[in-house]
Image (cartoon, rainbow, N blue to C red; front, top):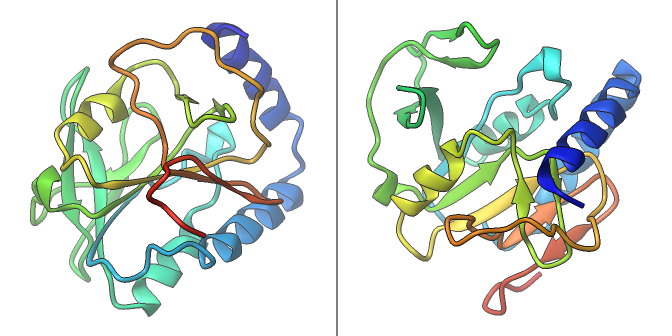
Length: 192
């Protein structure tokens, strides 16, 4: 399937989810994430959900990270093509931007090279780790500025597509993707 068709399909699937189902799926994903061998690192990049787009509720994951005393880094849209990244502290103020994205107002900026694990939003993914986002390229550009060994963990409400036809050299594959039902492992050097 082409990316634009996948986006339309998964927007419809998300819109059909009952609020309680979305909450249950989000909790299942957070619990499955605990099974990954990613917990020995220090800096974890986490997105906050756009509730009107029915994204996975990452507050469960946020609680896990806080409970494990990890450094949590949140993204903020800096321009039409780039993100900035801020450390979550007790003083961090979160505000929705014009697109409904909850993001830090300001704070301690963290360089992408310092981040160990990136937990990524997506619309769809396939069985070899390709992902489809909203099509703006924010995360591909961000991942290109991280260290090559950064772990990339996608979160999906739905299972993998067989194949995403439209990929290009700028697309960065996932190491893992976690759904309510299972964990997908894509990189050879990762182990579950």
